[in-house]
Length: 70
Image (cartoon, rainbow, N blue to C red; front, side):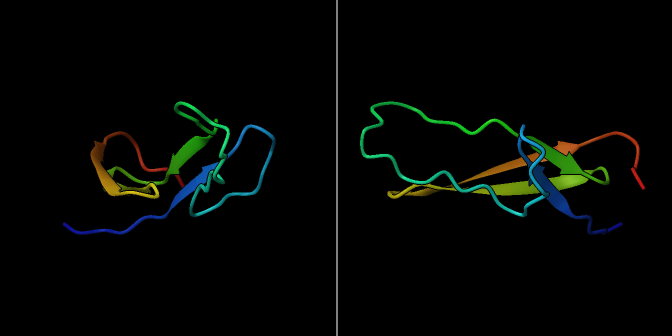
């Protein structure tokens, strides 16, 4: 069975749902940076996220299990 379901991201400051998270470059950053937030999935299934950096792209693939949300 193949299905599609939207994926959305939102932050911790009641931001509207977004289809991507962008962390602007910070020339003064010397280590890892992050952006707190949540991933919202409406249905179980296989999902993949693409993570881009200035030097590369990485794919994170995972299987979400659980009930479907209306």
